[in-house]
Length: 410
Ligand SMILES: [Zn+2]
Image (cartoon, rainbow, N blue to C red):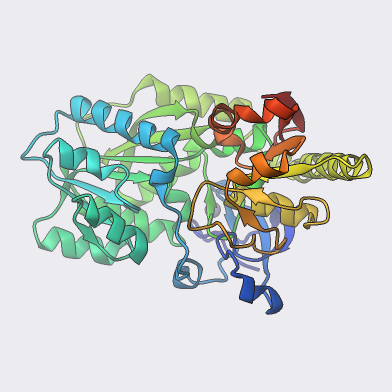
């Protein structure tokens, strides 16, 4: 039996079992379609001691992230705006200036740090993926091409590069060794410094049946309760928390050294109380999840089969990881969903892993005039609808499958 990656308790309880799937970012070239594809179990467990929901640890990070494909954060305008607002807020809140030093872990293509470059605040990105690191450097962001952890943090500290602010947006849930990563945050943080981490809130994942946010590279599914525990074991403390609408409901936690003079904001207690009220520290809520997932999956399948029997034209929009989890669990192939459109040129001309559904540019919708456009990344549904209202010219509608199937006018 495997053990909890944080506290070592044996993992006896399955939270959700989504069968087997290929890595969600393993997009295929036409030549790959005739080759075998590797499927890994996609199954989450819940630890009944620290309540960390987690994948089993059976792959190494370099296997998962070593692909030549990479997600470029700057493709999404919603995300760019979110990053710019964050930088404005945090510079004012922490009074950051030209003598400050900011580190972003998983700096991606520089979508966030470029705002610090513009504000002339010294910064450093940590980004192991070569293609995004190159993009970050092209907008003036210095980048270390490495994985972040305690070892790297100790080198940075030895070089006098401890940070006033360490930012981690959508990286905390994706690190295989959460204890080592958190220890690294403490080592790389100046006395009096602040860590902010954003990650999807497990409480919202459960509430809104967001099982499609489960994929192999997403190792941890976090409540505030669990994060406070992981922080404490590394010598850090959560001083404040904000609830964000991103990714269907995220938390932004503010961390500091355990002995920092800062108090704890009432928001921390409020979120902890709500988690407790909803049963996040009892096994029942986790054991119920699979049945709710299967209802969503079955409703999508019934809809696609019904539309197909009526001869309707269906397109999907957004070749995101979420869509791969959903389509692979539901067993949807191109007989039910013949193509997916995506604005990222790096994905166009490729095929979704597992389902082998072709990825086309958004212009394909004007040519094929789908009657329903199923938006796979439901978290950016409003943005997608706003950009593609022209589907109403031929009476097209938009739909999402999660948290329940919903079809609406453009
Ligand atoms: Zn545990």
